[in-house]
Amino acid sequence: MPRHSLLLALTLALFASAARAQTALTPDQAEARAIFQQLIETNTSYKEGSTSPAAHAIAQRFLDAGFPAADVQVLGPAGDKDSSVVVRMRGTSTTLKPILLIAHLDVVEALRSDWSIDPYKLTERDGFFYGRGTSDIKDGATTLAEALLRLEREHVVPERTLIMALTAGEEGGGGYNGVSWLIENHRDLIDAEWCINPDGGDPLIRDGKKIVRPVQASEKSYQSFDLIVRNKGGHSSMPTPDNAIVRLAEAIGRLSRYHFPVNLNETTRAYFERSSGLASGQLAADMRAITKNQRDSAAAAHLSVSPFYNAQLRTTCVPTMLEGGHAPNALPQTARALVNCRILPTETAEAVRATLVRIVADTAVKVVPVDTGAPGKPSPLLPMVMSPVEKVTQRLWPGVPVIPQMETGATDGWRLRDAGIPTYGLSGVPLDVDDVRAHGRDERILVKSFYEGVEYMYQLIREVAVGPAKS
Ligand SMILES: [Zn+2]
Image (cartoon, rainbow, N blue to C red; front, side, top):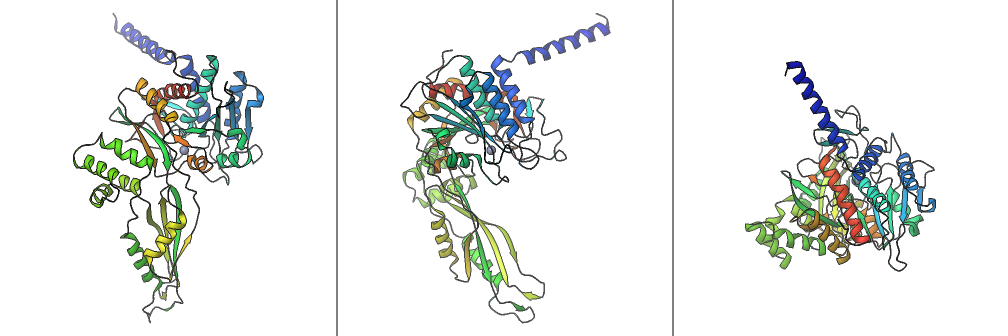
């Protein structure tokens, strides 16, 4: 073959395979990709954008699919800025309570100048989807919407009513949170027996292999305290023994040497129990020991070397900000440290404050709460949740262990738990543990993970609402 014809043939072959890669999507996958693209390309950050256009776009898809208008609502407290969308897919049962599916539509703001590509454009490159919200959590929102649209298309009628709420205000900045607002103002619209929230519980991949299917059944709550010392001050040429900075420093020193007691709950006990089966040697022995006796101080000390295990075992409080004094040549009149606590869901902010006061052991150091976080009880590991998760996981990802998890950060899940709706962080989109970019620049997920997540969520929702899919 002459050289130019060979080149032409190669080029044609390349085009053909690219076209095949595009057309290789099933109709369900193509729809999921279109929803994903639409969400990513709608700026839903609070400052520059709004969730309302995204909420309306999702609503329109359900209206087009034949859902009655009364079952598709776009609503919120701020006119048509930062609305949420709530879709109800009616089940046959009149006695069973609905299952709620939530994800937030809003994203953390992304600056074009920080990114190497346009954050508000879905870019597919080298096996990744790039864009703000690809991993937090427009992928999750897409998997929920696509699952319901596919069930509808397949004329599958769930036994339990399914309610999907895609909401605003999770990332903060907007002055209100969509989930809390719905709980307070439209509880009837979203009331459910339990809830799936893909904003937690990411299946994890390491070195290209799925290693765990977490079920996030619990979260720590977030509460900061100011430690403040005031002093009458004076000229720095005549120091007095009583100095605000020194008193504060000593208080922080005592605090830093204190460890809150180990306090396992159903979720963290199950986490260490199941993880011990995957670990080996001393680590496995320590995990087993702590589940048998949480006062085992040797096991606790070994495990606490890892910041992750330490945060699973106990409430933590750590100084994160510091200020004091007002002039180089004056005795400080105030010294202040911000101490950020992550409180176990079975403990209260008041009890933590009392502990801080006791450990600081200095009445000149005031301990003042600066924000409030409600704990929300850990969700029980109900068989009606755990058994479908186990089934679908073994069907799609044989051998990948299902492990309950307490999140040390926070999602909207605690708001629902606090309102009495057990909530489970269950994402279907596997995340590479070495490539977490949520809230950061060039946020991305694997293309393969996205389509796996679409299928996983469909199978899971079908399993919990209807029973096993015939395939
Ligand atoms: Zn999120």
